[in-house]
Structure formats: C-alpha cells, structure tokens
Amino acid sequence: MSEKKSFEVKERAGLRLDRYLAEELPDLSRSYIQKVIKDGGVSLKEKPLKANYKVSPGDVIQLEMPPVVEMEVLPEDLPLDILYEDADLIFVNKPKDMVVHPSAGHFSGTLVNGLLYHCRGELSGINGVMRPGIVHRIDKDTTGVLVVCKNDRAHNRVAEQLKEHSITRRYRAVVCGNLKEDAGTVDAAIGRHPVERKRMAVVPGGRHAVTHYRVLERFGKYTYIECELETGRTHQIRVHMASVGHPILGDEVYGRGKAPFELHGQVLHAMVLGVVHPSTGKYIEVEAPLPGYFAELLKKLKKG
Image 1 (cartoon, one colour):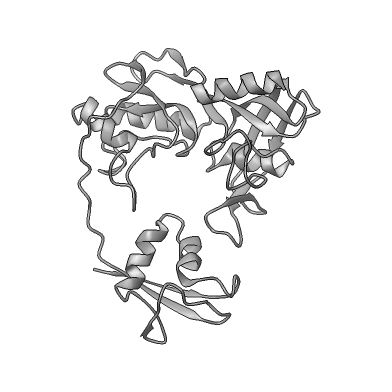
Image 2: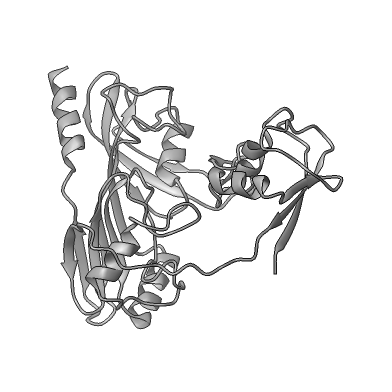
C-alpha cells in the first residue's frame, strides 16, 4: 500500500516544494522526492504540484508515497580497509565519501555492499536487509573506524554497550578558531533543527548529548583536537563544536562558508573504537591511522 502524509506549511514560506519536502523528510534524497512529485504524488487541494511550486503559509501539502519495495542489496567487490576481524566482529576503516548503508538514492557502492561480498553474507540480520551488521554509523564525509557484527548475538551485545554509552569512541578533528581552553566538555541536548530539517542543532527538549574535547595543537586560526563521545547522537561532534563557536574545518553544513585547502567535507576522523568482545568478554581497542588528506593538512598548518 502507498503511504500518505500531509504537511501544513507554517514556516519557510517561499521555498520550492522539493526543497521544503526534503527538509521535512530528511531520510529521503531530494532526487527521490522530485521523482515522487514528477509522478503526481504531491498535491494541494487535490491538484498535483510541480517541484518549483513555492509553498505558502497555510498550504496543506498532500504527499502519497509509492508502496515500499524492499530493495535487494547486492554484494560488491569494493576495496575495504579491514583493521581487525574474527568470527564475531569486523572493524573497518571507512574512507571519505563512502555511505555506510544503502538508503533512498544510495543503493550501491556503500560499505554494506562491500561487506556483503567480503563476509559472503555472514552479517547479523537484526537491522534488516538494508543495514546488515550495522550497529552504528559515521557520516559519509567522516573517515575512520566502525565496528560491524557478523551474527545476532554479537550485534545484541555491542548494541547494549552503545545504549549504556560504554563504548570508547575517540575522534580527531581540526576546528576553526583558537580554542583557548586546553580541554572542555559540551553538554547540550541535540535534536532536529526547528527550520532546516536536514540539520541537527542544540535545542531544548533534544536528546542528551555529551562531547569531551582536548587540544592537541594550535595553529592560530585553527585548532587540532581530540574528541571523545560520551553519547552518540547524529552529527554530535559537528553540532557541539559549532555550538561553542568552533565548527569543524570543511563542514559544509555547520561551518563558516567555503573551506580553504580544497577540502571536501569536514576534517573529522574516527580514530579509536573500543568494545568489550561479545564472546571473550575482553576489552579490545582498534585504531585507524589518520587518512592522507588529514595528515597533509596538518603539515600545511604546521608550516603556517
């Protein structure tokens, strides 16, 4: 069956219809929404709308989504940087510009496609066919280590550690500005931005979020830091550092305009991940070395 939704326009009057719906439905790509509009799935007072329609206050937009078709996620022989692997877990160093799992608009070339090939389908099924083995994610333009589970027992035990915030997650980042404190903590709730729905923000009533940071090196206009997550909210480090006036260098969503150094996305790397092994009960910690682009940037900053 098709899924029907309605949206009453209260804010963001004057936006194109496709952009308005993309912000209201952040899990869907804008190209997918444009296809739904083109196929006549979006209407106002029973009249189909075009993508360039400018929404007005009081408009009640009707959206009829086509029936959900469970996509088959195919194994793909992709280059993977495996940091550690055993019968239960696999730690992967994700490169920049790779999506973790398939979603609307991204059905191939994802980490999951590569893992299905590498593991010959032996991944936990708790999160369904689109996210086999995936217990946590990092953003497309964030590099670094994440853990994937090969069976349901391992998945449940690692997921419980995530829920209890007992997993070690340390990141490296370069932020804009000179962080004066040698160390600090951002304790601020995070939720959807009230206007721009694809963004997250520090908002009243959001989900509890805590990020600890310490300065590793200062470069005048920029600061090299390590961040440790106490919680794991969407875009947490990016939102928290922006909220204290030090957005991550290269962040096109939460940053300060176009970034220098020909960067493509935020300078953020998940460097260390530690969990209690689901079978042995022993703590294991895996480190992903800084990617080339990050190391080169640090060299440029040191030279001034």
